[in-house]
Length: 283
Ligand code: F3S
Image (cartoon, rainbow, N blue to C red):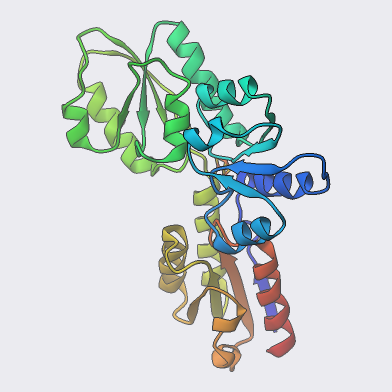
């Protein structure tokens, strides 16, 4: 039996790096350790960290009360103000902001200084977008739909710098940029979409088209895992969506010669490994 595990399965580079940095901090025992927001959308990882003593700070108000501690900033990043609060309160900052997100923060600052108004294409309530906003001026704008573009409070000739939330859909980004460009603004467009999600999907599709059975691992409510499943199912009708090894249908290995494995963005490596080992041993 041949088993192929996608190289891009599971955590993207930025999330992996952030989770590792929290575990790294656990080696010390001089100060309490916090993360600003859950480090990842995966309950098991957050619970494991909690059991090891890592607490989650949920809001700016909670952060204001923290002293003499280590706080890890997750891959989504945070606005400038959050750094200021931490510095004022003598908090030791472990900055696990994904370098791709950090780059957008720099763009926001630089372009504002250059006199351009920042326009973020993304979901306004997403923590990454909130963080990016926190590096722009008060007049920063966020749009997610063509209707919102129509309502943009812009004056003619205004200089704009357009950036994107890293996980935004490329085609939708293009459509919105095109719509904004119909007007007579002076626009600088910087495509800041990260291709980790797309790479994971392309690889999953390729593997699914080559194997007899495909296993997709990820949380039930994870939309990127559902997407992976849909893509794989189109290529391979023996595609199984599981959360953990326990969900794996023991018959899924019957009369198959090759199995592919991929996983959503918040699936920890040990779950992928567990499934991999079992598929190899059992089938
Ligand atoms: Fe992940 Fe960083 Fe891209 S957090 S999705 S590698 S922007």
